[in-house]
Length: 342
Image 1: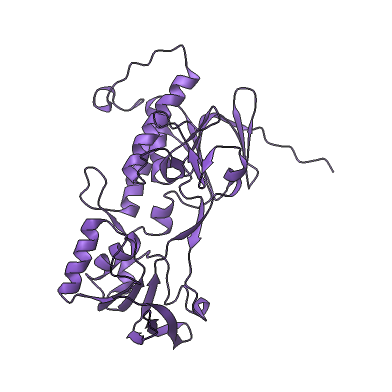
Image 2: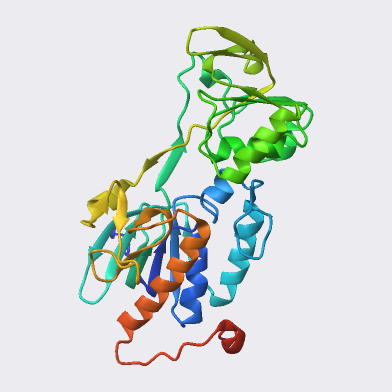
């Protein structure tokens, strides 16, 4: 029997690792400079955390959008990128990245091989999963009455919801679900929350108005229910005093466990599992490799989507200069240039 014929590598100007919001906007920025892109992501759909974790969560700091749901933002970014005909390789991870003569070769977990003149790493936090609270028997309740992400806000209408955690996700979802849940109870170990000041102030006001119950300072200690259906959440304070919170759902928001996977093996300069880049170009320590979004680090870095959007533009222009060093680029605004080919 003859050996299977190996497909030739796919060839592109830019390979983008990560199809979250910043990766999607990088397609647009590269497209405006007439650079073709292939995009690789381990998830089955574009959008990264916005799609996988909180598609209905409102985002308030996108310029021009006083409030926009994460899923809708992804839809609009994908539509914005669509004229440039990006090629998506979803449900696969880049497992090998090697430097060849004048290009980078990417190999994925499904056997796809891509040769790219430059690579933009927009991998966010890498592979991610929730930090689970150490509660006996919690696995029996998971995906039935204990959820680490909110995918459909409407599922909690008229329900009693306990939210545990003190970060942005806990605060934002407490505010959001208070609009439709029968009762929202927020469990946190201390009175101070690690959230945006405006959101924390709104949470305090909802508590003063008796719309939200603040269960502080307490921490989770147990679950009560049957056949995966929750009836109460047990909590304890620092002195061991316990309380029983009658509840239909528990939403523990204790952050994500992050794993950069093969990226750690690519010989890049790292700072606490983030890729160190030059702020003006988002170039990494290896020529032709760039990093943008949450995975990139430089002095003064802000982990905001809008910062990632700006970094996508910087990387795209740096790549254009890298690939065409003798060509003078006359910068034009999109209002005068329009979208190439449209």
